Length: 501
Ligand SMILES: NC(=O)NC(NC(N)=O)C(=O)[O-]
Ligand SMILES: [Zn+2]
Ligand SMILES: [Zn+2]
Image (cartoon, rainbow, N blue to C red):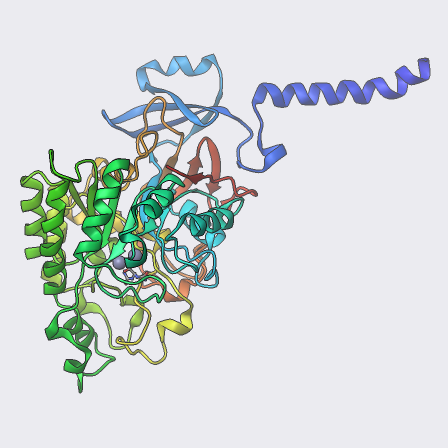
């Protein structure tokens, strides 16, 4: 008996005090690897916390997955009542970014990106939620069954939360029970193309498909996202005969602003159905990646004035680059609609600053370097899509500073508005009861996107941001209370969740 006491008791006591220590400290790292932090109850303290009530000096209390209080500096003595304190000084503390437009290409084309690398890049860039597009993966997400394949591919492979848009295609648009099954299975809304998508199993829709889709979406209160460009008789490929395919101007000529304008003109004939009292009241129309800042934007403004439920996004590449600076053959810049001239860029900024453009998204649409034809430089045959996911926060900030962008605007474009579009009431704000999805970053810290910079997208070489100098460095990213990224390092386990409506 005495031997037993001597041999067994000491390790037992050690074990129980160990367990007690971890219980009191709320450790999770040790057993599931979801967080780089040893605590589940802690305070994030900073001089610049961006809340819906303005920027405050204070602290955000996190318990488990949620934000449980937001304190101002004068109430800091409350902190001493318990919980670990993370001191971030002057760094900005704001909601993790929500990217409503990303192509992660999984399953089926994970050699293009994939859930693990894409969501690691997102976390490193301060994005805590993204909504994956229904195309470029294989198969496309156009049915309940194919959504299940998406979910299966994502599970245990995502480092941030991921929701899914379903595809509206000619094959399902007039089959309301089929579409309803897709929506019931949890897609956050639908997405369609008004021009060829570049992907065979994702054909384009015409306005009658879109009208039908809206009427189904109305019952669910969910949005339809539309790639708004239509082919014009005047822009047939044959008209480009003789034009140099390595010149960016040849590509620009192949996709004039009129393609966007005409698509939007058609869209407005059905978006009126979403007006109060209209046949599709409850549905919403969202124009993705607007590039034309002229007539297209005016048309959207008019629809808003007329009560249509409609919003519009643009992307950082349209705000950071202009056609004038794209070198011969540099297909990293190829995307649709195209990056237009500097005057258009100025107008996009103007529209964004005054709220005519509602929000931003990455439209991260990578491929394998071979399909970008970087050596050949043929703009007409290279894959169209910009690789950007990890860089959208510093890009928006670096280029926005000269237009006087505020931190509150950053949160509106990347948090509040996208959360609303995707139906995520508990995301996009530093507020009590919201998920503790938080990015901590330094707006003044400048860096080169060079080989020394920890980059997580699968094919950094195809990104037009490589080599650029940017401002706004992400220090830390919290997802549902887990510290998932800190200074170049991710938590071991992929603990993002799939978001289903
Ligand atoms: N198949 C695509 O990913 N297309 C994408 N390509 C771009 N934007 O160039 C898009 O969103 O339209
Ligand atoms: Zn598109
Ligand atoms: Zn896209």
